Image (cartoon, rainbow, N blue to C red; front, side, top):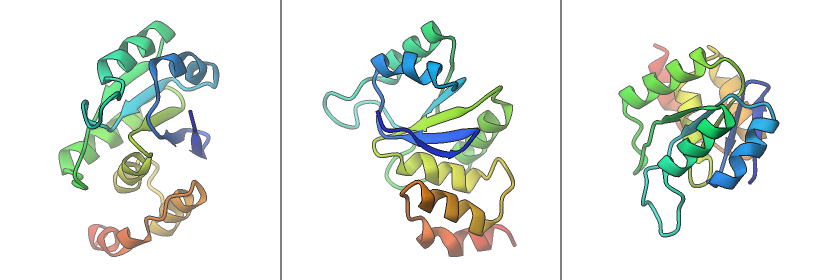
Length: 140
């Protein structure tokens, strides 16, 4: 498990396993968001398996799966809502973490500037600079 902290309230990770969830809880997270559709690749743990492990650990679990580089407004809005309603730190995961940090950047639950969002993503190892123009257009 490779958790990349964006700030004290949010982190992203590549795919997690049900056995990782107890450690995620010990690290202080209260919510897990899965941004990966089930059956994307062979051997991938299902969202149901992660959700069951989250429930056992006392964590909230939300499935907001996106694929194919598409980030529908409904997914972005739901992500923002979950992030803003969370009662503690949130861990979002997908195959590599890129979809999760992209959703965070688009949803902007902390109402941060474009530069701040892109800088935080870069600090965690995700270059989202190609999104700048789309983010600027959104803010107009």
